[in-house]
Image (cartoon, rainbow, N blue to C red; front, side, top):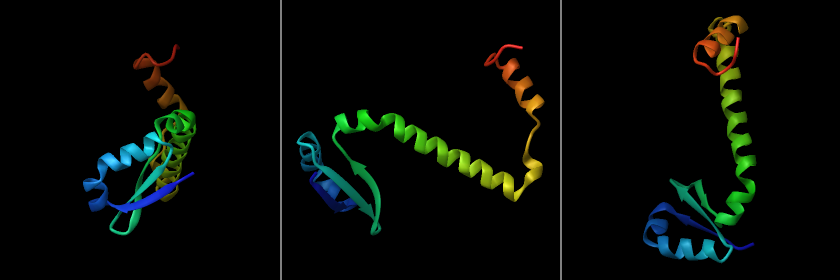
Length: 94
């Protein structure tokens, strides 16, 4: 696997090169302010890992919610309240 790393200014001016590289199987990491911010990968690779990406993002959201609850346990709602809201919204049956 070939990978190149560009800063955001270079990436902006070389966008076509980045797309051409992705179409040939190469990855490009784009740094912003010296930190990796985004990666351009071949679309076929993205399709192959899409579910894993969604799982990763869901895990991050869950961790953020857990951290928020740990910092303020009174923010939690009871299961019965959540379930009642889901029934009202038509997302589950009674």
